[in-house]
Length: 351
Image 1 (cartoon, helix red, strand yellow):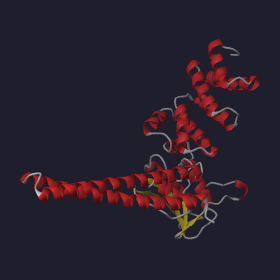
Image 2 (cartoon, one colour; image 1 turned 90 degrees about the horizontal axis):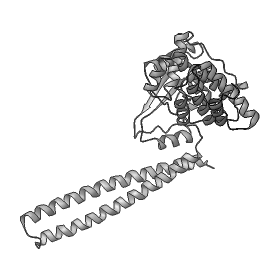
Image 3 (cartoon, one colour; image 1 turned 45 degrees about the vertical axis):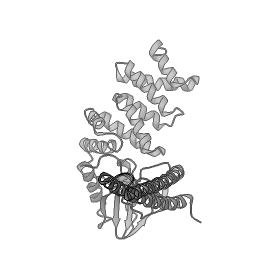
Image 4 (cartoon, one colour; image 1 turned 60 degrees about the vertical axis):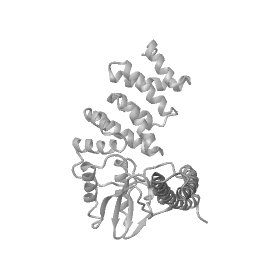
């Protein structure tokens, strides 16, 4: 028995074919209507409205216009069916939408992929790591039903992903996939052994040993990896501002990698990071620590309290300490965290 995703993916494919067919029908009807209108106007300009040829062409204009409206109605019905199937498909698909590579793909990202490939060359001598680009309107329907469904959903946009190609599947390919995914915004590369796509496998024990990357083991390398991660979520202007505060950029990238473990979509992570990029380093470190501890507070509470305290205290260290103490006070008193932070600012209670 086919799954819900497989059924909806098949139905979406049929709906898209039907919509394309009706679009072509509308184009033909428009051309036919314009042609007969032109012929009628030309005949009218050379004769009178009562001329039999003008009357015949006028009747044909009305017929072609009815045919055009009927074609438009069929197109609108096909588009409505396609939208309804897309809505159902978005509802049943997994929460993560990182099957595509988001953000900027530049020379720095390509150099990172080359470094990963070189690191695993000893165990995977014939491995290839490439970035695949699909233009709008073109579909890659290889792979499982989830991939095909996503391709159909986003067929109107340009899409990119990383492919790892080997002759035979090997255990070393999965640490490579995990390492690329960690720094590339949670994007999961597709793995092909020959012409066959191989499903991702989780190593026994859940522990993955990564290879050290040449050129990325110093401060400049860590900063480059932070830029690669930040560009998956933030625009170039935001990354440029963060690059002027290198430690803050590295901390924001660490927070983004932590969010990647929380089953958040790319848009959700982007929105969260945009709330944090103006914070000073010590406050960012406190936010990272509190998020990693999985406290019961929502991101909204922690981010709003952090911005409130960061803007109030001139010293970033004191603001970070105030945030930690506000969290402890909120846990003890069950008062909302944002209210505790606001009281700390207005009354100086406990500080």
